Length: 247
Image (cartoon, rainbow, N blue to C red; front, side, top):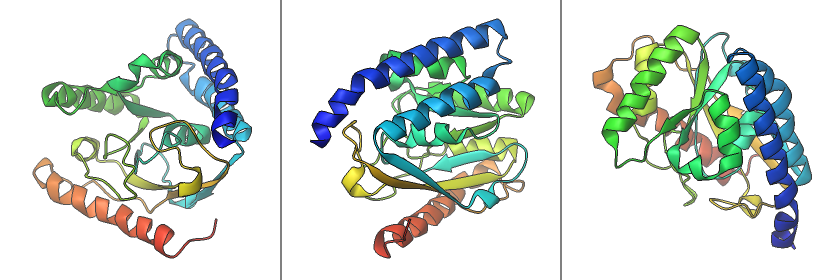
């Protein structure tokens, strides 16, 4: 039944993403990019909330008080297809995103993301191009003052663990020297589609953990730093999955 429901809802969801994507493209074109915040708040956020409502999914937010004012680098664990629409549903102020170029083939998503100033990363086998993207992103973010969300694990990790962290997010933080806020995504296994789309209904949690001061970070210490931050998410993962934290 869950699979049947997913495929019945797939067409209206794709149509909704496509129509909203076109509306965002037109709005950003007419406003010369100045309408991005309007699009995030009044087009993308309602779209994501509507999709979650269709699937019977409720988002619970914890630790919102841990979000500092001003520019922020948000990072999160990445275990599910639900992660990105969940973060978009929050409409975090002036926040851009990183996506893999793998997502280019999903045209409705590309319509939305490209207009909103998303940074597209090459796959891991092209480290030079990835490095160039992070340098370009750092320059743009310094000038714009925008916040950004990205996932250090890179790809979705469906093993039930916190995966290996890449260094890009932490080099970016060392460059910008703005607060870094880890977000733990808790999606119960029974409803988690993993890398697919066959999601169940239920409750998911986005838990904002205390902000980390990056003003003293240096590029040469990134390897050690990323493991320290990864451990914070590992500890939170253990708390949710071993003690069955109530939603």
